[in-house]
Image (cartoon, rainbow, N blue to C red):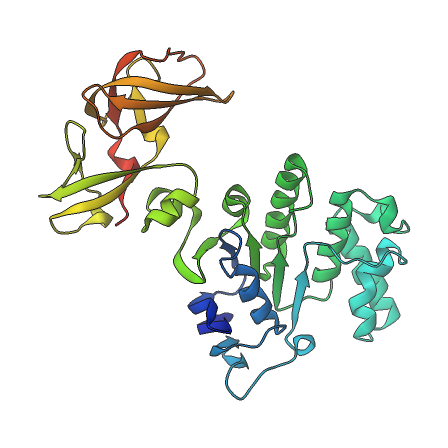
Length: 357
């Protein structure tokens, strides 16, 4: 039995479906991220799970029991869930320890048990030495840890996080994403996490549900989403990619404007057709002046460098077939310094090629 089951849920505002026929199952202890651009319906979905927004259609079940749907809507406070908001929402007039213990006090937990559980949770989030400070005396990362501790100390059945790291700088976001993953591994809460940041989602998630215009495009592990995207939107939203027109014939991909063919991967088994689109990751392309292509790569023909950008960890080149055709983005190591107009031979690793439409 799934821990949390969203069945064909929908939310309309007037004639607009903000969330449209969305189905999703979460297992006990799983961390699933709702990922997508602004306006894709991810926060609305989270708030429907929490009980803050009523469904237009469909149902939500927890432990096999309906908590939202026709004829039954369990109030938020009776769902056994904790939610962490983007703004943290910690009380400025309470100390760290008082903030963390707030939910236990509301539940009328005995004082000695509250003290013990608050102390244990502060140890877990490395805030014991700040127990008597107030929020104004804390950094953004420390305030985020307080919000996490307060949400987890009540031992929720489901933990909901709505873009909790968006107010932090890049380095602190990375640190806190790793912290959230560590805490999930330790406590095994069933967690729904909302973000628009792809790298954040890849860092913390067991699975990622990619939403677009209120619909679920694909749900899968981070590795599968990146390497085996099913739609052009997923391929373009998860990392950088090249979307290239192609013809599929006899188990081979014939790329428009390029020499040679690329064999279809086993999970891309489809019939012959024209007008296909394929995703090719920049790091799966090699210039003979750059990193060694390695075994299993296939030639694609001569190319000319159209533009280049140095990004520290790699060069981002844009190349074009010498005879003309679609351009491709290629990543090359920092030592591979090629001038604009330089001609080279391009090759591809077939494992980085996926049919997306």
